[in-house]
Image 1 (spheres, rainbow, N blue to C red):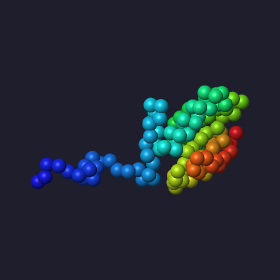
Image 2: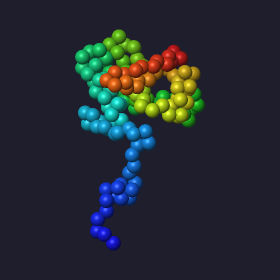
Image 3: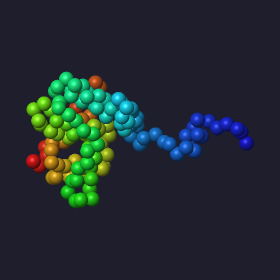
Image 4: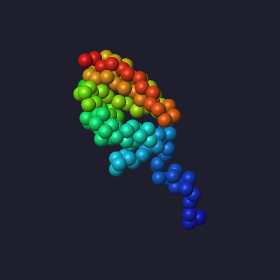
Length: 132
């Protein structure tokens, strides 16, 4: 029996596997984000707060949509310098679960939901208006 194993064998034994949608966890400013895109957006939001365009932002905010058991964790809640508050979701791949969140947000979402997708160096934005 050999004394060494290959990196592939170690990875198989350690139980760690690649993310289903190829998201690469990224640490930005000491915070671990589940994807590079989300980390990039957090960096932009910090710049906007520093420059005075936005007042604040919060990450991983929970929302109850419809039934008490259905909790949705948004990537960011953002407030601009005029006091307008919205929710941001950074998407790479739109899953079946997120399509359900989208439907529930249209019925119960308390704020506008901005869905951001990377398109090269730019963000493509889709807005779903909240119920209030």
